[in-house]
Image (cartoon, rainbow, N blue to C red):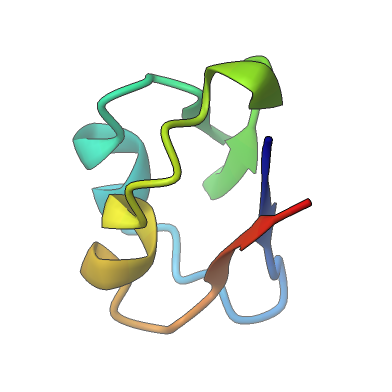
Length: 62
């Protein structure tokens, strides 16, 4: 299983992570990215990390 965390302090609210997540577990809520889906659905592909311009997204294997 993978754990996706988003640093709300550094998230710029661009939506790139949510737009590019193939598992659709990320959404924009009140102008910031949040994990709203099931972490079990995360593919661990790290696409969200690679498209985030501020480095706010982290994917770690648990």
